[in-house]
Length: 138
Image 1: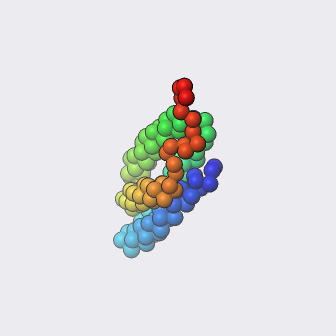
Image 2: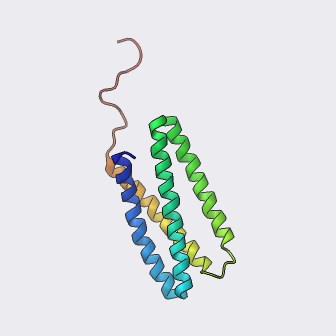
Image 3: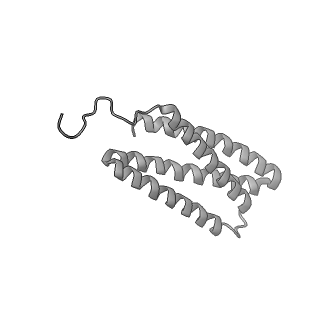
């Protein structure tokens, strides 16, 4: 991973962990230990899925811009489908509170997305290469 990718990962992961802790405490107050466990699982799922997404995009960026964009779009679709599948699979679970899992996943997804957007805006990456050469005759 490049330094920019690590800064972006930190910019998204830190707020997500903080929101995850708040969601776990609220779930524990509202639904007890099963609620706290469900919210913890939801927060962990989001952190793992979204971290893997950044790693995949970072790897694909070394290949080409087209591969990076493809990895980003496919990764986003896979993450959303996997979270939806887990929400459906955990619908009738009794070991933890499924609603706390769902709310934890939703809250952490929003926190990750906002943190990632904020981190990307703070990177101040150039979108034009100042030393780049233009194609064609000079």
